[in-house]
Image 1 (cartoon, rainbow, N blue to C red):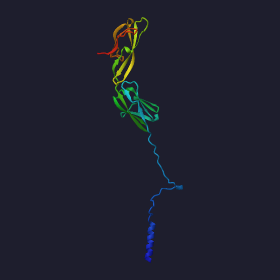
Image 2: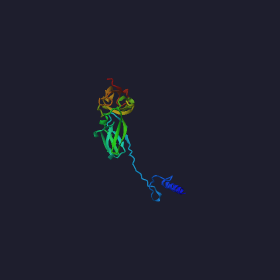
Image 3: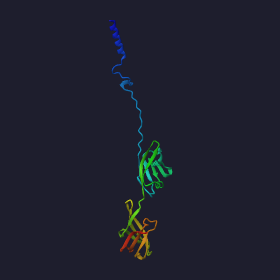
Amino acid sequence: MKRLICFILAAAFALCLSPAKNAVATAEPVLAGGRTDLSFTYTPAAPIYTVTVSGIWTKGDTNGLICTCNAGFDKFTNVEVDGALLDAVHYTAVSGSTIITLVPEYLETLTVGDHSIKLILTDGSVQTWFTIREAATLVSATTTVKNLVSITETAKNSGTWVVTFTVTLVYSDGTTKDETFSISLSGNNINQSGQLKFGDDHILSGYTLVYDIKGDGSNIKDFRLILNSE
């Protein structure tokens, strides 16, 4: 009997020391109303900046290349092109949000092809690409009697006539342009034939105008451009 009592007491004691089957080792603090106390750390997302560039810059262009970023102007610090930090003389920077213009003098020093431009900001950076291409050269220029606009005398009996005509210009990049030109000729009622070579500072310096015209434009036998052979 004594042994049975001791066994029962030992078993009861062991039961008291054992954890409940479904017990949780650590419990979150529970607030009044049964709400669990949860804490969060808020990390704001990094600002998203975009940048656009005017695209292609052609050698000889007197305008700069414009790069626009939506970052506030107060965040702008520097500009890099192809990974190299630019001296401030190579660009201008104005607000709106941030507008960077690479100056033509600097762009002329870059090679033909693609280049990277990166805007360095106080809270990050943003990058895009632009292209530099060779200046288009004049491939051909044509005019005919159909392109003759007018023949006018500068003053009555002056003997000096202004001939105005259009020329179709074709460039190496495939673009075409119609441009108006005026030349001065001297002669009696401009009833004359001849050739006129354009000056060196003229866009048509490599061409000669061949003409056989009458002052009132009623009888034009020849009116065309030829490429100089020399």
